[in-house]
Length: 569
Image 1 (cartoon, one colour):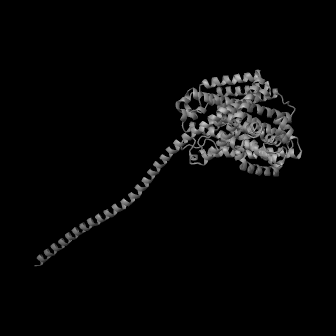
Image 2: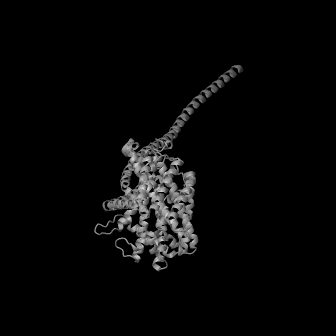
């Protein structure tokens, strides 16, 4: 089945998922307290009973992608053997970073390290140097290898089934090696509906976070009030801008905005490094990187069965579940922009580059905030505890040119917001258009409006509704984590078969080349032998001919002598 010829007409996946999301939004709008209570109970039950599963599965995901990248399977290309990447390395990394996770970097870059300085992981005392080191290390831990390993598994599997197996851009396509043609039936559609719902809830939560941070920043640097009206106005403006970007498509819309955003983020990052506590940031970077590499295994596999601590559930497990809920969205988008790269290139870009950026970003912004907090220069801690969306702007406010940098930060968040909306509408459009790589503009607009409406309604209905939506996206991650485990089995089956097939083709090609070389060598040897034989035969022939000629000449001479003698007599 060729993905380029997929029927783009909306089907049952669009109808059912839209109805479910609509009912969920209606519930949150009419009774946010009830939704919050029910979702809270569901979250508590999930953390108590499946926290161990999240910790173990995410640790396994990291190990799996690293082993896969360095194995011989890493040479296999995401596409046909002769295909090459569609996008340059810079554009590709820019789109990876800006697709949605950049919002998390900007929102939590200051807040998370400072939060853990006061609310510490197990084994650390609050407001101590060790707590500051642990705060940076755990912030990086939550945004480096583990989330990108989760995204890369979904992205790798979908890129492979799309561009190598020519299946539609659907989560269910990854299960073709396991369930065959049933991916086209109710089993496959159920998987796709679950992925759509998880994506909707995750993206709507990010819309809410982005709107909160933009309005918080505007209220910090201007008289604009940080109210629900301002937040919904921001969402409306962003929705209009994203529609313009979506109309341009991936190559002209998301690609251009991502390149701009990467440049703006780099400028802001370099500025903070240069004018901030540069030496403190450098030392924090080295310490955090070393501590992360040294402790990543123990952090990945540490539970608290002998204590009543809830820190792990409300932080690490919370982030793992949230990243898994984001995996369908990030995976499909990453797959779309990664055609033509080898698995090893894919893993290097998707796993290592964002992880290194996470260490740099969190140690720069989080390290600067911790430096200000510890020195008593600014009450960053109070802001994190009360208004987390103001943490970044409060930190920039203590540095030179704060008005300009705060404005740049607002622009950065705004572009991240637009690219997230653009990417999400594209992904949801593909998922609900039978996997078309080119969903219609109408379907993309529909999902953009639906997501924007979801975030707006829940912001209007109160923070309980938004919190309930975020919690619901985490609950939706549990079945999707199980789906990801089966995706690993599926990709291993496909890679194993193709690697064997490529091995046979390589051996066949090698045999042909060896035969050609031997044939050429034998041809030269035989040619020399034949030449020698021909030379000998020709020499013999020439000898015989010369003998005959000499005989004839001698006879003629004898005859002429006899004639002369006769005449003389």
